[in-house]
Structure formats: C-alpha cells, structure tokens
Length: 106
Image (cartoon, rainbow, N blue to C red; front, side, top):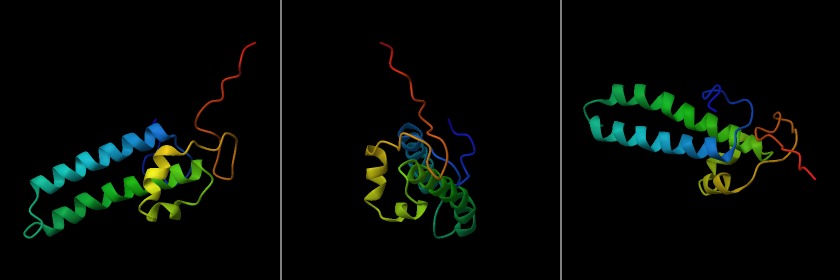
C-alpha cells in the first residue's frame, strides 16, 4: 500500500484511495487551522502543492483501476463513484490488478 504515492502511473484499490482521501482532508484541515491565508500566502502554497499533487496522483491511479483516464476525477461527483466502483478484474492498459485474485477451492 502507498507505493509511489506521488506517481500518476499504475492502479490502486478502493481502500488505498479512501485512506488517501482521509489523509488529504486531515492535512488540509490542519493547514487551514494553523495558517492564516491572508498573511501567510507563500507557506500555504508550499504546503498545498504537494498535498494536491498527492490526491490528484492517487485519484488518477484509482481512475486507472476502473479503466478510465485520470482526467475523469475533475468531475466532482466522480470522486464518490471511485469509492464505490469495483476495479477492473484483469490486466488493463494501466497495469495489473492491484487486488490479487484468489482461486476458489472446490
């Protein structure tokens, strides 16, 4: 979990994406509470750029898991769809399935 979190390549599962959203909102809240946006513009920019890069990269990888390009995440309600929709079961153009397929025993 969280292999190359700032990379836009590959696929991730719903669990990792959900944890990424929680991390994003916690850090966003901490930044919002601790930094004054009027007087501390430069620190806000320096703190938000890696945070936004992280959540966009994770969103793009989640889009890849359901065989879509990362651009789909700019549609705001699509974020909720990424939390609900199960990933593509097999290899797709973005890589292998991050969820291992367990063979059924008879």
